Length: 291
Length: 324
Image 1 (tube, chains in turn purple, red):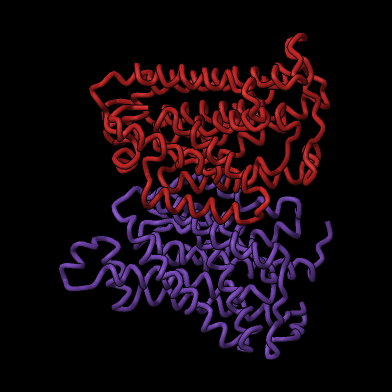
Image 2: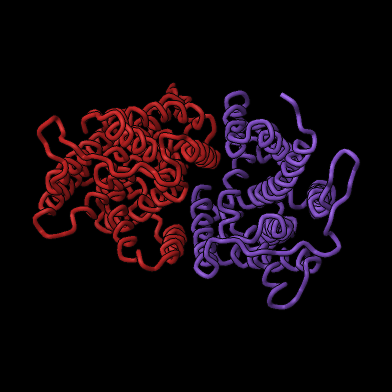
């Protein structure tokens, strides 16, 4: 079998891009799960809202990509915090499963509403002028926007890691994950921290949505299937470690990209198959603590 | 898993629960038996019966074992595809078609069960969802499922060579018999020593292990029983709908199964039946409103989780202090 280097590298790049979305989304899921003990099924819908937010900002207010990159995560993050205050906070103390069911309901509502008004087809979102075109790297042609998505996602992931693992705020957050009652006794406002954590996770999802808008088009169901893949990523990586989520996300994206080149029929299913293999060999996930 | 019990299952009562359940069962059977003579659209009720059996099978896992499967559509869809293929391509008789379809669901539930029970709680839900999505993509590409078109125009045939399933009333009673058979199997299972151990695992798995129960084997057996009966419902549904399509394997179908059981009452004997009919009726009446059905389903999910965790039957049972 002769290998077409150009096509292989192109698929590898697509894999890296998908991997950065997996990383951003599974990172958010892990952070949220740590604090709220909720698996956020609405994560895919919120990712879609991030993309739509960028679309509205551009088409209604003429606000371009760069501002959308900042504003959309803030707006959708604020929506998430509202959601946490009005719905999710009533679930504390209940079984984890109720959190999954509630957020699944929220995802149905959001996706259903967007489908009502925008149908199922995709809306175009142009690549910003500064990132148009491509670079010839000698061995391959790199579309600048795609390179930007990978690099920027990586930076955001590492910043999030730094925030949680290396700052005072992150230390409080990790302490509150371990023992909320004790942390409250130290005078730290844990409920507010929970709200902010949910906002942070949701903001990351919305950011991924904005990044994906010029590549994947803006569709009401763009997050619906993605979230299931991200669940598989989370099962593979385990939710115990931030760095674990990042590495697993990118790695699985690359593996998926390689599959697209070598055996395209399996590219939709390879992440799920890997999940099965990991469960058979190491049920607690690659980086996760035993549950 | 203790909260599921506290919030959804009526407290055990000193009244005779078995007698109450027997009365309710007799009433349900009588009502369902006279349906064809009342002028109600039989297709609707048959569809409701298939989904009711499906929801009851799902409820066996969540309500009594504390395991939330978010991929039960895979059993429904797999059995549907296999039965449809057996009837249309292999020209098998209806009873053999149902048998082959249910056997396929049995095989699938053994494989997926062995994988899924390796994790608990929230991970179990995510794994079952991912496995069903894996199957969805396989069925999307496999030639025998005819992709987006599905298998259509399935012959209903004559069961055991004499029972003509093309007659709507006859078909109705066959589906009703199938439903009652599945329902009684589930009812028997949850009232057996096996069911008691399952409830013990739901309440406190480490304690059940310390008492010497091999909890993984119990959970696997429950998963297989649930998956097989869900497949049986899928095989019956082929005769009603006369098609088998990707809709039945999609994650949104798995979500609907969860919704039916949640609305009716998790961990109640009759809740899933009531919930299935409520949701099917809602879909029937709102069919013209497009995606508003999805929105309303979402609202029901949110409302049930926040304010109505016992479900319809659970609330009734709680009010009358009876176990239903």
